[in-house]
Amino acid sequence: MGDRGASNHSGVTDFILVGFRVGPELRILLFLLFLLVYAMILLGNIGMMTIILTDPRLNTPMYFFLGNLSFIDLFYSSVIAPKAMSNFWTESKSISFAGCVAQIFLFALFIVAEGFLLAAMAYDRFIAICNPLLYSVHMSARLCAQLVAGSYFCGCISSVLQTSMTFTLSFCASRAVDHFYCDSRPLQRLSCSDLFVHKIVSFSLAGIIILPTVIVIIISYMYIVSTVLKIRSTEGRKKAFSTCSSHLGVVSVLYGAVFFMYLTPDRFPELSKLASLCYSLVTPMLNPLIYSLRNKDVKDALSKLLDKKKSVL
Image 1 (spheres, one colour):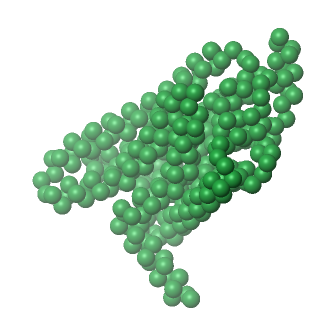
Image 2 (image 1 turned 60 degrees about the horizontal axis):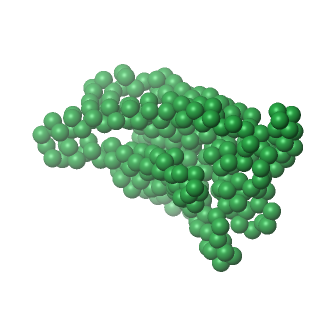
Image 3 (image 1 turned 180 degrees about the vertical axis):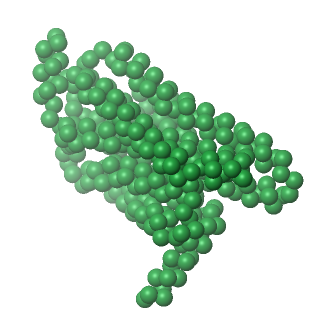
């Protein structure tokens, strides 16, 4: 039995991405929707990084984190969107074994890094509001670089573990992955291996990743709310809350979609696809909009950049 599983595993050269089960008319509509969303992701996140890099006033820890958030959003959506869009126009919808490994590895790396980065951003807001006089001391350039590097490192370790666990399974069922990209849960359904240990390790890994980041975010905002409520002036409270509302919006959208996906039973794969769509494409599209529409510094920097381009033209 072990030899048969090994041979079946080694014999897999590609997978079929089933995607969304819709007719030809809806397929065209979905392609146009994906194209629009991906174009907005490219425009919004590249624009945000350009603004942060070119405006000296945004040379602060908050915008350093925000620039890295845009970088992460841009790249993990680019791991998913181009292949998903091309599959709307091809009959085979195949992805090579190596391509599937790359999708799972890169997507896991960037999505986990984003979770840790959002926790670092919550800590940054906590220091800024609760200890403003010591902000420049606590949030030094060295610490900011370490927090970002640590986010990528945690993403890389998690990605290596998740990818290696997924592709040590024996795939002896259909090659059809019931998703629009390679993900560990639909791949598990194709395996003839015993999944008990695999599921325990996956659940433990998810807990190790999600719990610390959520705890840091919750505790940071408990202190922030407590501090803001002590501010006597309405204008002061409004200003303090406005610096956090964008971050809270991003956290809510990302973690809401992730929890929804993991709590969706396997017998409802279409709901799982919708949740995945939210955090793989909708969240990277919304993040720059949330930060630019609710942030005066970003809006001022964008206006300055556009005025400069007009003067050049």
